[in-house]
Image (tube, rainbow over all chains, first blue to last red; front, top):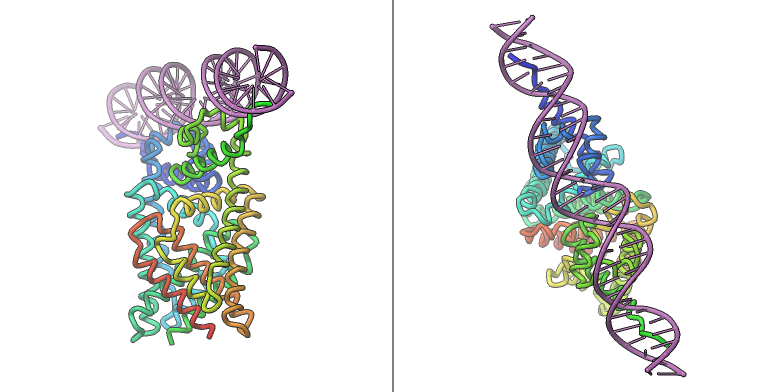
Length: 192
Length: 192
DNA sequence: TTATTAATTGTCAAATTTGATAATTAACTG
DNA sequence: CAGTTAATTATCAAATTTGACAATTAATAA
């Protein structure tokens, strides 16, 4: 019939560039010009393939949630059958597994959510899913644990982890990262 | 001699408006026009009293650090002589003491610090001061505690607290706040 | 080869934001 | 009242960003 569509590749290409720009310049500083330059495309192609600014951030959020949900599932599947919580802790606080760009994008999305109730719902739900996954791990590793203890420890683990991730872009916080990991292990040891 | 200067009042007035705009529109969205409107002043007066955009954020950061440092000191002074850590925990997780605008401004400053090494140093130092204050409280309340335990618990408390504060602007996170407080209390109970 | 559909490029106008400076007004002192 | 200093206002030019649309080019099927 006609020329084949490359819309899906272009959309991915644009969102990749968008993430890089958000990480570098913040959500407001990620202008269409910069995104286009980062993607190696003409600015009009952003409009053609995705749309205006609002549609751009919508697309970014959707992809972000979809991707991270999948990655969390995969990570959970890869954990061993026993002692999963401690293995996960090693994974979470391993600097090699920290993705600066990912952290900056998620921070930017949380900030953007403050003035956008729809986005706020999505990010809240996203956070809750993560906490629930941790709670499930806890009850798997340590059944018969008091329900309130489970939710407190899960909230503590996630809080400490989120905080470290959001601060690490500042750099030079190795000690804080180590101490935070120890704090998480302290909480886990309460479950025995 | 001459007309009296109102520069100091004007500067405070402008920085107040700046904080309000940063909280509402983010650090990039806080344009000079919006700040001027929020302050009830002409845009040129911002330039006259403080300067351009860069000087504006410098002034904001300096005031932010100075003010919070003072507030932390005052808060510490107001704590009782015994059981100070638990009293502080009640204070930190009391919704009545949560200042949304303050949280949003500090979050914005952390984000801005990522591309500004000088600002990053200041925010890192600011964070460290807070952690050290907690560590001091711990050793006051529970002397003879192992040093590593002290720093781990302090990192945990601060991490959990910072995380809750940065997420609460999303709203509807009461359960997370309560669970987080419980997690902090769990850490504190390890000190006995 | 031609028709068809989509990708790509080019261009323009409107709105926003900022930096800068001149001109004017206000408050105080002697 | 006159002089002096600072506050305030008015206005301009430049740069940035965005939205929209027309024109062109490319790839495939019949």
